[in-house]
Amino acid sequence: MIRDSISSTLAPQPSWFTAKRLLAIFCIINLLNYVDRGAIASNGVNGKRSECTKSGTCSSGSGIQGDFDLNNFQDGVISSAFMVGLLLASPIFASLAKR
Image 1 (spheres, helix red, strand yellow):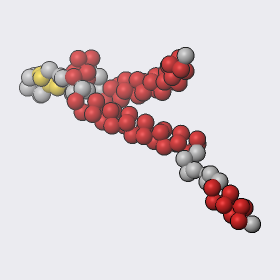
Image 2 (image 1 turned 120 degrees about the horizontal axis):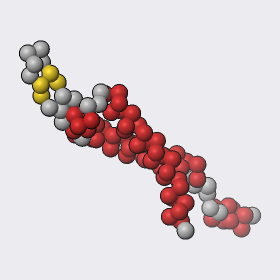
Image 3 (image 1 turned 120 degrees about the vertical axis):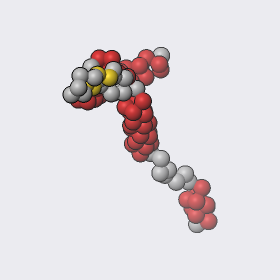
Image 4 (image 1 turned 180 degrees about the vertical axis):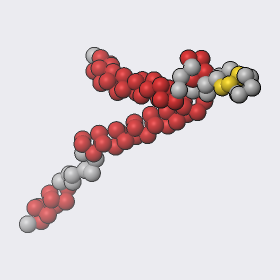
């Protein structure tokens, strides 16, 4: 009787950190990381398009939008294409890194 109670208290209890829960936590952390990177890049790097006033005075654009004369949609597609490419390439390079 005493032996049964001691063995039941010493038995390892199931941990909250199961494989699926850890995977979900790491995915959420990774998502927050890339959202943060995207917010920083969109404000500092993208810049703005060149604009011309009715009087004919034109200002040169800045950043990626100014260099390639992109509208906001086209600039967003570039960022999204990078993220999708990174999403698809990450598991491939992770499996190569294991070797």
